[in-house]
Image (cartoon, rainbow, N blue to C red):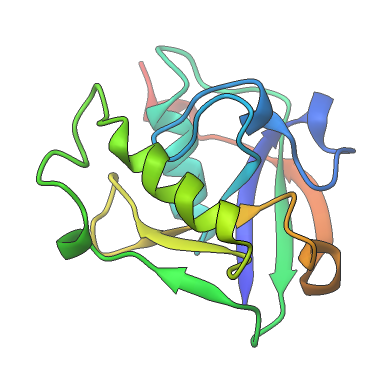
Length: 152
């Protein structure tokens, strides 16, 4: 499976990416090592736009990771989530759910619905999973641009 991540040039040399260790997200608390990726480049870009404020991100790279097909992932469906899972502020129970799965070490990560498009998925990979490096490899990191028409 190929997954994608848009990231600042400053951090493209970190593998696995470590941003979640320093910033809270919908699916993690600070210190929980979750590598956020998306199932398509366009969804990865949309996720970045949703979190970038009023300006377009600059000096970003598209990172492509390959995950072994038999890697153990758990899929979390909308039906498994609280009704307000896609709201801001996001319910802290989402981070609790992911932390519970991560701490068991049974799964390399979770497949979760995207707030940006409920029919598409983000793939959360646990950077501290003992089998991370045997199941995930980076294929490329190349410059990515954003069309200036996306934000005014």
